[in-house]
Length: 250
Ligand code: F6R
Image (cartoon, rainbow, N blue to C red; front, side, top):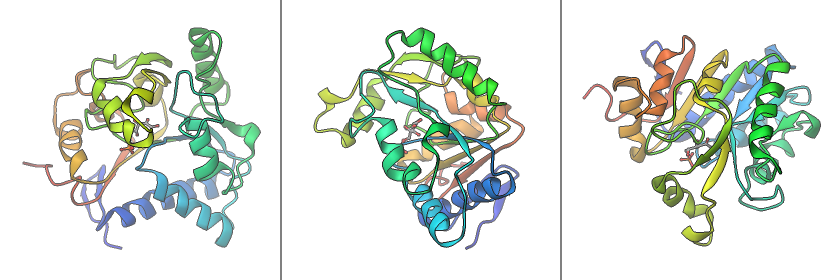
């Protein structure tokens, strides 16, 4: 695999499959060196191959995830954990069950909580009581969102309930029978919450992410562009395939 560094924080891999392996290796080596680490996780299409590779390493290369504590970024409001499009369900299917996580150690925000505002505060407390996130995995939306922090989100924002942008609802409708079924609200870690992670790994693949990546890395760092918050982090790595990197430096 050829993974030249084009800047201290950006790695462009040869393909999306190589990018997934690269990110999986980062996560796996963090787990191997600190088996009780606190890992921040994402859902969506981007990390699926990363999680597949972690499962492979669990089965074939002694990767022990049983002592890892995980915190997911976000969850739809109003979807129970058994709903096939809930992020809890996604994580069970794509990672937790198959890679030997202990379910008591996995945290996905509860989009069914009776008092969502109170629950959001508790989620923040749980993260800080655990000692804070060692490594946070992120994807990026076409509009530059990270987690469900849509454009306009404050850089200091914390875990809270948000309204999803129309663009996000449309992009995520591919996982539902119709656009009408996509929840309009979500509970998400804030940008401020994410920036407190000791290391951040953002992965993006495909041409459709190229503009968002260029804006995130080379655009102004402000709330119109949530992923630009990574410019403020001292230990963030962005892992791309060539199409996602195609607008950098232009
Ligand atoms: C998911 C999340 C979102 C996704 C983003 C990209 O937990 O926080 O920010 O990372 O919407 O989604 P995909 O990977 O489906 O393109």
